[in-house]
Length: 132
Image (cartoon, rainbow, N blue to C red):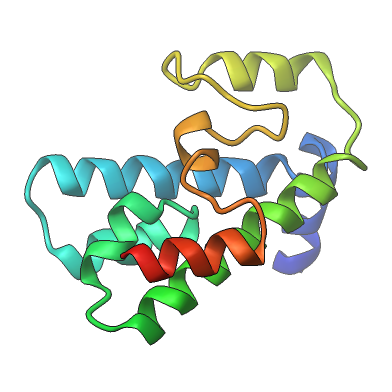
């Protein structure tokens, strides 16, 4: 019952719309927690859900955790970019994008400052990890 209702809502509102909303809410939560000096681990949990490396990396105490965080973040963005190519755009989705507090969004509906944090490829990821 409930899972079918949730699936219907997802399909009716546009494939991926709920996913983007969830990622956006996670991003806002990670930034809000950081602004109010909330718990660093709580901030990192939300940041990790939306690939916000700026808020995730400060709690990584060794190269293994930093490598995992960067690789997960990079992979999440790459998968979402690929999936966004298969989504059909609807007029109300444009309104959703415009309502994101004036944040500049990339064509993949990721805030540019999150996209800019991501390495371009594995070599760049390793270089960023090495320079950390």
